[in-house]
Image (cartoon, rainbow, N blue to C red):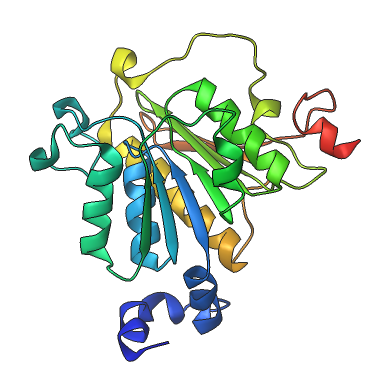
Length: 249
């Protein structure tokens, strides 16, 4: 590592069980961030700042004025720009040593496998179940860890899936039953809530990539920000899950 890298990352290199080895693991890692909104903003910023070597930034939407209350990676000057490009500009200014790749098209079942196969970990920061199910299926098929977060109103949740046989997947948590999505655009969300959940997602990603601590595999964290209370629930695998049960057969 260069002297500049040692200085930039010195505070986390000092951490027990992290050190230079952990930093080098981050630098060698490639991560896909799906969605660059309220969750994806802190996720991408913390991962870039922490020194993840390659970030793939996926979002098909453009920056809108209504986004700026919570999507802190974007600025007023970038209204109308593709979110992936707006995020790339912000992250390049934050850490020019990170390789930034943009994906400006919608992620669907047909396009995801090739993208996921080229990364070490995926963060689901999107706001719709169709994309979440597609991302989950691609991660299970590739055996890639997935960190999932969601937030609405004053509530949030975060969990992680190993992508390995025997563990649960996102569809074990939410069966694909055709239910109607709840979105922030119709229900609202308090801005710092997405920041809290996104920060935890970034923390879990760094832990998984470096082997630091114990990831949230098999656990679901639920936040009630109105009371500022957390609950931790065990998340078992569903033996009838149409996605991950196949890998256990």
